[in-house]
Length: 465
Ligand SMILES: *Cc1c(COP(=O)(O)O)cnc(C)c1O
Image (cartoon, rainbow, N blue to C red):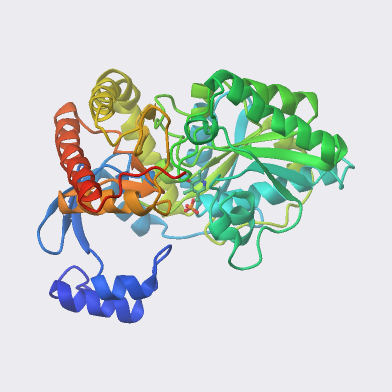
C-alpha cells in the first residue's frame, strides 16, 4: 500500500509543498516564506495538523463538510463501489446504478418541478453546464439571440472561464480575459455595506429592480437567465433583505427570464431547509449543486433542472458533458451522505439544536466593540468588523487588512474562521453541537479581543473618510 499518510516532519513537508505544489487563491511566495499549515486528519468538527494541534473548523472545509469529518460509512460505501464498479461513463446511452439512484433521490428532494439532474464534477463545472444549457434551451425554442445572462457583482459561481465570468469578483475577472461576452452584473443586495440610510426593505427592492432595468436595457428577447446564490457565500455571507428574492422571481416571470439558483453552499441544509430557495421562497428553473451534496467527501456537482427545460434539452443532442459526470464512486458517496442526513434527521438538528445555539453565540459576539452586526441564515453567518458600529464604517486601512489580522488570531487560537475583506465568516459542519458552539464562541472572542488590542496598539481603529 502507498504510504501517503506515513508523513515527513512538518518543515520538510512545507519545503516540498512550496517547491512543487501550486495552491488556489494563494500568493505562492508568501506561502513559501511562512510554510503551509498541514492538516493530517480530522474527526467531527476538529482538524488535526502535522504538529498535533486540534483546530475547530468553523468553515466546514470550504463550506462543504456538512456531515463533519471521519464518518466511517462514507469510506465504506466508497470502497464497496470502487470494488464493484470504480468507473463507467454516462455518455452515449449508458448509465449505472449510483448515478440513477442519486438523480432519482435529488428529484425527490428538490422543490417543485425540478426533476432532472445533469451531473458535473464540481460547482464550477455545473455552472458552465448551466451557461450552455440555458442558451441551448432558448436556441432550440427558436430564440438563439436570447443568450445574455445577468448576475450580480460580488457573486461567486466558481473560477473556470464560464463560471468565473458568471461570478462578479473583479479580482477573478482581472486575470485571464474575463468576463466572457454576454454576461452582465448588477448590484448585490448587501444592505450592511451598501444600504446607506435606506431601510433594508427599500434597499432590497431597489437592488432587485436593477434586474428589471437591465432586462429593459438589453431587451427581454436578449436575456436568457438570471443567476444568483440565495445567500451569497464567498461574497461575505450576504443575507438579502426579505423584499429581494420575491421581486427577483416576479421580474424573471414577467420577462420570461430563467432563474438559476446557485445552491452550491445553500443546498443540503445550510440555511435550515433542504435548499436556500425554500428559505427565500423562490422556485428556480435550475439549481446548481456541489459542496454539501457529498459533504466534500468526493468531488461531485450538478444541475437540477425543471421538467420544461429537460424536455427541450432532451429533444436535442446536448454536446456537453464531463468524463466524470455522475462518477459512480462520487455518486455512491453522495447517496450515503443524503441517507445519513435523512435517517439522522439532520434538518431537525439544524433547526432545533444548532441554529438556536449558534444564533445565541453570535448575538453575544455581536456585542463585541469590533463587530458591526450579525448576518446569519441557518448555519451560515458573517460578522462584519468595523471601527464604528453605529455608522457601519469601514476601516481606514485597505479592505481585508483587519479581517486578515483576525483570521491569524483565530488560527493562533485553534479556530478556523475565514475572512472575506473585513468580515469574519462562519459556516460550521451542520452536525455541530451546542458544546462545540460554546468552544467556537470562546475562541472567536479571544481572537476578536486580540485583534482589537492590535488595532489599539497600532492606532488602526480609524474609519475610512
Ligand atoms: C464553491 C462555489 C462554487 C464553485 O464550486 P467548485 O466546486 O469550487 O467548482 C460555485 N458556486 C458557489 C455558490 C460556490 O460557493
